[in-house]
Structure formats: C-alpha cells, structure tokens
Length: 346
Picture 1 (spheres, rainbow, N blue to C red):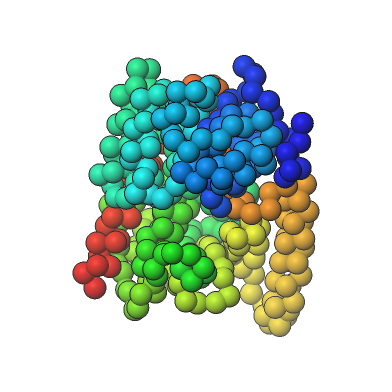
Picture 2: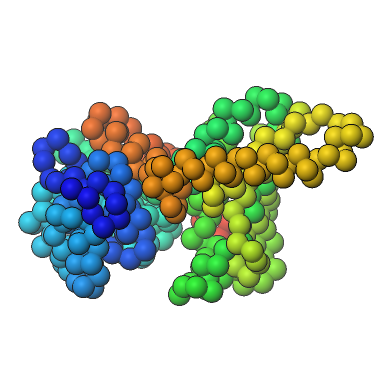
C-alpha cells in the first residue's frame, strides 16, 4: 500500500515497529515520511489540532488520529514515538511515553535546558529494563558528513573547523532571532561532536560575540585547532555550511543539500588561476550526483533524518545503544547552556 507521498506505507504487523507520531506540523510530517521510508508501521498521529492529525493520518495510510496523548497511548499498539512538538512540551510528553513503555526519538532541543534533558533521560532509564530516548540531531548523520569523516586523514592536521548558518526560520516562523540561534545550536554542537569524538563539549572554553538579535559568533580552541560557529537570523541567502581546513587540503559540506567537496592543498600558479573553475566543476558534479541520490531515496528535505531514524530503529530491534548516547546528548545540552549563558551576559 502506498500513501499519498508515494512512500510505501506499512500496515501494522508484528514484524514492523509500530510508530506513534506526536505533533502533526512540519516536522511531524517529515518524521512520518522518514519512519515510512524506514519500514515502520505508523499506527497513530497525535495532535491537539485533531484535523491536522487526521490530515497526516490520511497521508500515512492506515494510521489513526487522536487529539489526546494519553488516549492514544491507551489505545495504540505503538512501541516507539517520534516527538515533534516544541521543546517546552518535551518533558511532560517524555514522561508519559516512558511510563507507557515506549522508546522515543525527540526533536531538538531535547529539553529546554540541560537539567530538563537529564530529567528526560531519567524517565526512560527508570523504566523496568530501560527504554531508548534519542534527540533528533539529524545533520550529524548526513551522508556528506560521513563521507567527509572517512576522508579526514587526507587533510592532515585539522587547524580550523567553521560552521556557518544563515536561516530564514525566525522571519518565517514564531521564533525571535535569539530563539532561533538557541534552536540551531544543538545541530552545530552535534556536528562538532562527530568530527571531534575525543573531546568533551562541556569542557571547551567558549567565547561568544552577540552583535544583535539573532546574530551570534561563537569561537573556541579545541584539539589543537580553532572552532567557529556563526549563526545569522537576518543574513541571506540561507545556508548551512561546514568548512574543515587541514594542512594538506580542505573539506566543505553543504548541509542543506547534503553534499561535500574535498579540495586538495597543492599550490602552484596554474592551480591558483584554475581554482575557481575547478571548484565550480567539482561542486556541480557533487550537487548533481547528490540530487539524483536523494531523489531515488525520496529524501526531499531534512537530509540525514532518514539515516538517524533507521539507526534508532536498528538500536531498538537489536537492543543496542542509540545512535546518540545519553552522554553525548547531555554533553550537547551542557555546552548549549554554557553558550546561551555567555550570550546573555554580553
């Protein structure tokens, strides 16, 4: 059976993970699509706006719709939930899900602050036998980042990692500029966590410049190199880029489109002249190949989400640790709190 997305919708059987989607907004729709693509059976959609829940349920084929979470938990056979609601609601929802014995993949930020994140993890740890909970840091699971990490040894010693975001989220939604930065920070920190797995984010001595509402630059020294994170709510065009500079070359990742470039560090007069043309041709080839690949996967937005969802489901099926561990989740939350605190003083 196929839903109206063109993704094959699985009916609820014992061989499929029955899934509950909490929140029928934009992210709820993308999580439902990623769940369907990962061969889950979407059992129920929950949203206080029952019409929104019913609309998404129709997209998911056999899913039911509920306006009340507890009623959905009482009637649904789901074993895993996707929570796609604002962070202020995550604590209450997580407690209900844990008490009902469900695993949960929760949109970022996992909690409003680090104390909230710790409490959410406790809810799932205290369930008999334990249940998995994982934040949705999907950019850290993109194919472009995975490919870049495999090629990092070719760059030699990394001297600089820079992340640069210009987002339309504040102007197109209900978020203020600084709220947008607070929402984006977990993604940036999770990417750094993947690139530098030996470091502790909470132990980094962050420096923050906040030039205006929604205009932040964060910098630090880490692992012998410089880390920078720049987020702009007003800058255009929109972009989300990571640049990694090493002694022997550089890597550049376009996270919005999920492709990367590896640029060699050889220097000559001819290479300097040809550099713009060489980079343009490499970028065209990488972007074209990536577009074809994403089209085949039917991954039209939020690349990396399908990979994270599939990894989370695998962890549930195999009783293994989640793709983002509790320690990693709390480390991101602690670092986010520290950066937000520094910004509030400045």
